[in-house]
Image (cartoon, rainbow, N blue to C red; front, side, top):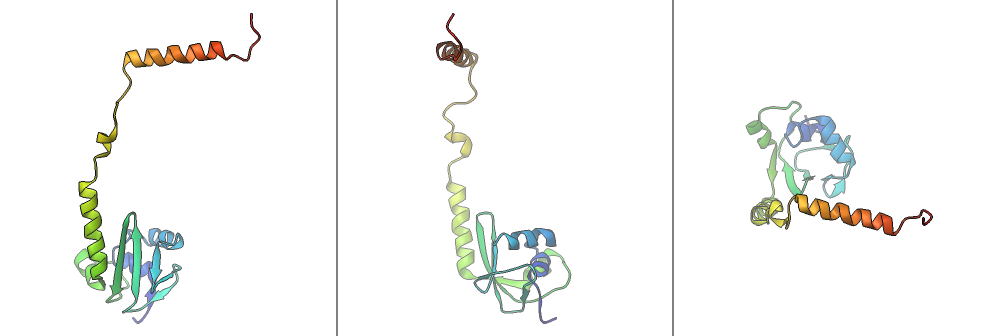
Length: 137
């Protein structure tokens, strides 16, 4: 096998769980082959450079082999070699996320108390009475 569709290769190399998910991301412009955005039917061969963006993670890999079927993960990892820059960027991103602030800690207040709710309700009713569009009685 000399050439193969990019969506099928991404599925066989276990970047995506299904070919349709791979095709969707390719259509969204998240996959580039040799620096150019690809279409799902784009044919790739060994030696091509593929850039795949999954969430915040950008991976750049060089195709080392082609496979027509999806195999186990250790076999799938033999189909590509990740570049040193890509591995370094992923390590930096993982470290950055590890030391990022916990989202729950950024909340200053939690759920309103009963007292807070009553104050809100009282303020809302006074606003409605004050700025009503109805005719004064």
